[in-house]
Length: 337
Ligand SMILES: N[C@@H](CCC(=O)N[C@@H](CS)C(=O)NCC(=O)O)C(=O)O
Image 1 (cartoon, rainbow, N blue to C red):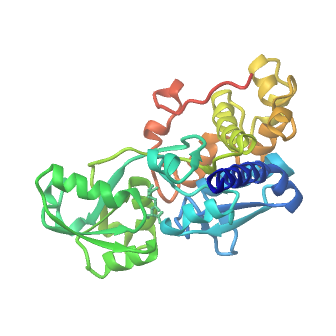
Image 2: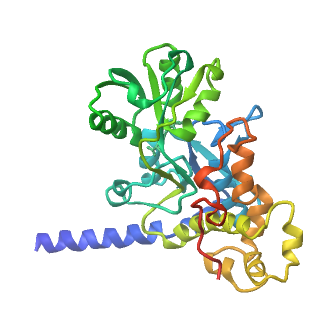
């Protein structure tokens, strides 16, 4: 009997939890702002500028989503989270979503109960070294002291890579990216490792960025994208289609400079994208012109990439495999229809 009661109580709790967590869009609308988990300060991805305003490629996803919901990209509260803090914060409900250079892995979904919505940056892990050392490949890093941030995929990847190549290492694990950079600059390690995009970002925060090079080796797959809790399909869909909306807008030539022309377009795909045909926004719980709102607020995928992290930005990252599939890359979004 006790077992049956316990089972029933468990089932009721599970139902209640699902019902409660299935309300994220309503909660956000009632609250009047989106609460978005971001990194603590990665230039180009998410960092406050001199006036305290959060900007970056990851920040644009939050602002784009706020624009879709409220027609106002400023209705976002940014919660800076370290790698260790991010998933517990999302699970507990401290944030509505994460847009924080997080790698999509099996465990983070199946064990932590989270869902990756889409891949908006295809990355891979690399190494940063002092140029003066004249190292040209990660295979020359045998017996190195390697600085890495706790709670990241980089911790295990690094051990795997050194073991697979018959090399030994001493891992120096730091809690935040500030500690990571400090330890590396103080010479407490020979190399710093994380996703290549973050190496570019962290190098900018160093005293002499030009003294450090990113080695050409990429040792892992790091598919990065926004994350939500399981159990709320409506919210999952909306975050996912915010990314897909931005990618489709680029593919169809809909940008901050062409948005007015797009609203008058006669092309069926563009007519659907901007909400002049169909009820696609309503089906997601927002207005039918949600992609127009997103593009006006932060631009399409390519505009956000180039402005924040692209070749002409301070980070200077080539578009590479993050180019659209139709342009030789692998960025590909399902159609709005
Ligand atoms: N993509 C990897 C690494 C993500 C990560 O947290 N990288 C660190 C290394 S730079 C970072 O972004 N730190 C910024 C922060 O803690 O604010 C993962 O999901 O585990």
